[in-house]
Image (cartoon, rainbow, N blue to C red; front, side, top):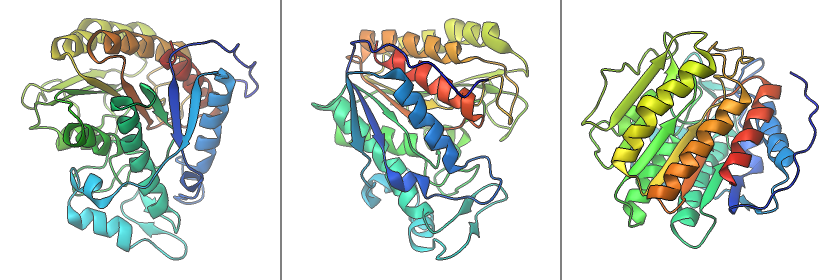
Length: 320
């Protein structure tokens, strides 16, 4: 895929807030690691490609301990906040490393989602995209894993339930990897619906269709090379009807773009227009049930050109 793209024509639409922070570039999991700072640069290039006139660029604040503690144990919070390395790297597992800049980046990433929730549920932009790293959906209540330190989307969803008059939050996860951390955190929480499409078999090996929590978990594992047709059928036949029945007051998205056909870590074979399509479907659903409120946060996506194009398609659809 070419790295050079024509800038999309500016279009008027719904206000969308972009939350990001320079600190998110400073998380460095080591040489050759796929979750590199160049990803964020590609994401922001995709944002620029959209040229949205209604885009509000806002700095991501730090998440507070209170916000983090709604979904994470004190032990994990202390481990990330108080034991970050001063030099080089600290390995949390084979895939998950911390550098001197990781603690600040993780606080800003989780804080971005909370701020986006505040905006969407208050007087801010009704839709938001959080261009942050490290990602979050593999982190469970007490363990950082799978490139993730804090579970950003879970922190934001718990914040919506606690700080706002929100009784039903839907989290849609279209990352190619199953969000095991998000599922675990909300397994017994009927106010949160977690719906995921993901490749199977693939890391982390969770996300069976039989996993249903308390009736609030909807998993649609897809085989390798499933492509657009199977992905859209899974969403149309299962995911979207489940969301409609749940009638969420806030829609949140774990926006991983690593199901793209060019991504090196999987082979689900989606294209950027699939991300535009599912985002438009979620916009329609949010307009029907949630006053149009959507908060999306970056998860995976490791081919820079595909990531840039997919983010542009996702953001343009959010603004419709």
